[in-house]
Image 1: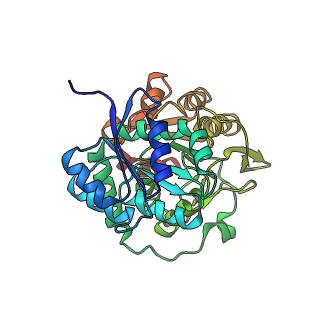
Image 2 (image 1 turned 90 degrees about the vertical axis):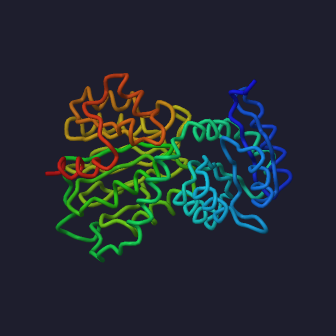
Length: 358
């Protein structure tokens, strides 16, 4: 009889990591670890006999690095991959390469205190594997290929909006975006298609700390608008997108005639920090009908209730449609709450933001 469990393969050159990850994942009744191997060569031999539903993959390994293996996997048989990465600047850059190549999630590990760290964070790893198992890899591959083509097109070198006095006055309108699994690729689709006259944008993408700075920098290099990791006091101005730092909540408030962001610690909300609900609720309070709220691909319900508060405050609200979502979880929950005025395909969201700013 075939098991309904999520059949997971672990690929990591550390025997301790393989052992602890196996123990942690098997705490979940819905996950079965079908193998734990030390490098991609062994992984490919194992997969040829028994293909997994999800792969948990280290990126720095002997014989073949994780990125090379991931690209081979995506070209042969696209399979959901969760990257197991170190909390370092180099680790962040490598992980972004993996996300660009089609990985669907990130699990972090420190260089020291590995066993206790992994055991303390077992819920995160289980959640990441479950989210990965729900991923529509057809859509993920199509989006990854489209982004790789558009990334090859050089962007015009324009003055940063933040340094232009003409752009420095706030707009009454702002856009708030929340997303999770599949969101790194989806945000690239949206932000790289915006012009410098678009309204100011605030974004929560579920992502661990240390990764959002590199992610923001990458999007900034690909986009005409300015994209930066948010810091408290940053102004929300046209032509700029501020991304909440991993491990911190982000909200907005008014400072005179201007919107500014506030970045702070705090408890997890809906299992997340940053939380989309925290951002959306602050936007409902301070911007109300002068906001556009957008909820995009992701597992779970973070942002659904916040989007309902935006809707109730008179804001315009949009959800990414099921056909273009990698995981139709967060948008689905918002639709069920009656929080969504319009569902749009991913490719139409940039145009919606541009029209809203006019």
